[in-house]
Length: 439
Image 1 (cartoon, rainbow, N blue to C red):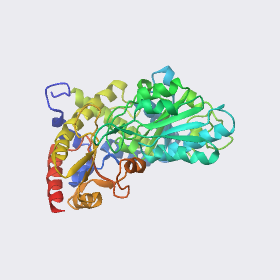
Image 2: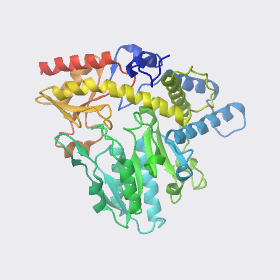
Image 3: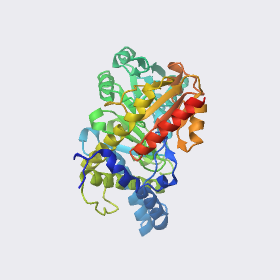
Image 4: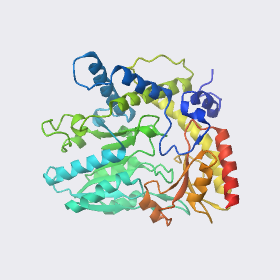
């Protein structure tokens, strides 16, 4: 029986994996996975079942409402387990579900603004924001300047011809005894580079500041671990991790303590997650999130050679099962990106934006520009042939501007997932080669 730990190539698991994704039968090549992953049948089935059996309001005592309430509660539990907040007393907290990571971070920024205005955070009125990430973790903080809060911008620094990094040494001078928060990305959604979030968090904490880690570009590839990172807040998008279109925000109990959520004034401020989920969460989305949990459990069984078991609706994947699933994901994606990066790095007209070598800490979100051609023209020519890649700044506009590119045209981005195939990669290379030769 093949297992991920045997001599079997991780690429041999892909045909079995693809059987769980109905959308892959279309023949289109999905290369925009950093923008949103495809949904496995587990998610589709759970959402359908929810609409059939539990499409009612939560909180009542009749059977359908009890089922709905239980589904939403389990979705929150899975969110905490996914980021490893469930089993460590120092990092127990709450996971807030919302429409998107962007919406959740705006909610969090408003809560901090209210706490500062109420004097709940003492003299700390300064925020440090990395401009190297998605605007979702930049603009919510920058806009607080209009309310008297000082915001310092922390920029990436060049580390090579086409590589940039978040250097902890450039953070230290920005910190003071007035620093309240440091907000930064764990992974660049342009470079595919994993930055040292644990070290950055440690530096911020020694200055008495809390940290907000944007894990959106990381969570589909590396299993989040707020215990290992030591962070106070961690946000990711469930629709980029084989789930429904939602966002999930983890916060430690201590980080939540001085804040008041936006829900109705008669709801107690410590009624979490309710206080931070005005109007409630998307119930069918919560069901879909449990479907993604079931998929990861299936992937774990596949990776270890265990016979898949019929999990009960209440059975969430263990931490070990999540690790097994993501170990396989990482091995497949590393193998897939190597020929693509090799081709891009060798092409005389292509400039890879980020590291052009496949290595540990380099994820399969790959950006590039073609000398003498607009990124829009390249991407659209690929789209016309059934390759679903994109161009632009991908909401990392400030970073694109910093590295000297036109933010309106930006880069071409090809982002792979563990359900892509070596054949798709080979066809992508062939099509891209022909497109570049024609323009």
